[in-house]
Image (cartoon, rainbow, N blue to C red; front, top):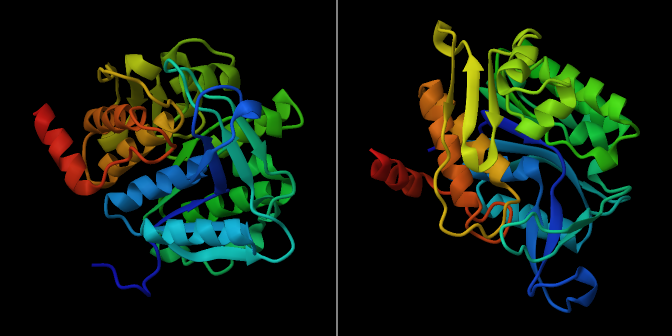
Length: 324
């Protein structure tokens, strides 16, 4: 059992938002009732890893408003260490509204995050982080898209984590609408990915970022820039791995798991990240990491919500035992 005052051994950072999910199908303009939940790719991964028993710290800002209070309470209830979550008295918590997904398609989402508390993140917010205690850092391409100061934070945290000897995973999580230009997005994201050990793009993201087509070539792009391993998410087809973890170079594709009904695709990639990262931290092989990533990603798409389908450790043990 981790002592409550001990520093987190895993760290994530970014923006958590209060999300309102349509209670019925149809255009958001026609929906009268919503269910309140939380949203954020970074928090999805943080919650997934915390459910598997890791001591995960969450670094961010929320407004000093009811939505910020709701987010803090929810994240703490999920087991996240929120000592680095700042209450910002001057800026609001970001909001997001999501339509009800239909026929397995990506649901329509509308964001209200401009000028949010999290967009005012800066390196100062990491001043109290005990990087010496860190075992692993997970980062995404979302914080650097929020603002120049949040981009400075991302660069600072990755540099400090690497200097401290922690392993680093990076998921591009592209949000083109938040960037001033395609060139700025690709240049910034690729520079951050070059500081990571494990890079986890989707195939479409990898093609957009590198200008290359095949999983093999996309993986080589990041391996040549310093990554140890690249995991490329292929959607229902599974995932591709190329890297040299454990001192042995290898590449392979692991097929995805059949899902009877796809309910909500949002969060599937985050589920994969939870699976792959947790497996590697558990000392599993790259192939086992890809399989676990596919498995948790398949769980994520079977329920409404971004993180509701992420399993706790006991459930994961059951799922993996059934595959043996």
